Image 1: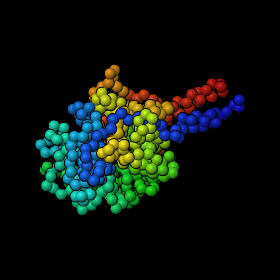
Image 2: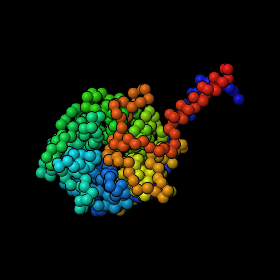
Image 3: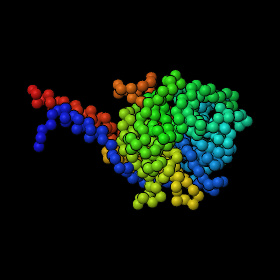
Length: 420
């Protein structure tokens, strides 16, 4: 066998460690939603997760239906509530929005084409009928007269609440949201000429905004309002395993580790990128054993790292299925993040480790949508980088960059020993 030099061995090791799986792996789902009858048929366009801070097992999924409005579901798939104040093209949720009287609640923002604007709601777990109530019902929608196809909420580096809206006509607008007596005001901060926006995600630790642009690929912008309007192409269509690009989700394993997951509706797959490096890790498909009723033409996804009761103690992955075998039309399919992680070799990180018999706890994250940037020094950009949960995690696998680093250190020590 030919002996390799240290540089050659180093190159082989790094290549092997960073190599991504090429063929998509199969992941089984365990729960699917059971939507009721819909006017014009159920057509889900987006999904968000609200995490119940008092009882994570009682958390809820919120769907944006382009024909009917907003609907909420329990984690067992049962439908809880219908809010039919016009249609909805997109929805997101963020906890800790200040209300009158010194209280706070989870803010839910819906892109409503019927009312031509962004309509704010709050989620109240104690309310009858499902929990969603419109904030300031008599007020006009935010940025009234403008039609949005995508909306995401995030916290700024200074703690302010920001909204990002992808305009139906193309481009992206960022707002500062400020509470008022019984309502909220939206102050425009910048417009980004980003083409047709299909998906958005904000990574709070890396101060990065990811934008899925129709027919082009995945772009990265600065998340702060003063970050300018120039974006950088992360991966184009035909590269990195993407044939198309739709909705995006961020799996936050810790303050800086995790994955960016991009829906590829044309290939019926979900492509996973390393959160630190943006290198492609692999792809997966969601379906039952034997390949029956797989997720197809997905228009919404959620990746959550906290425990959600005994049903999902290792976190949750949710995907919209646009071609469901259900007689009622498309639905959502749910699975444990642990099922996703263990389908890969080596396994992906599982942030939440269940105790014996499962756990019933949470991480304190609000479950809102969101999504990186590595400035080149190995550390996230921005000050005080953290998410809503800065407690760290217990992980089941070592990341690819960590494996490569350990291997290079071992080779370096071996070379020194041979020279001496």
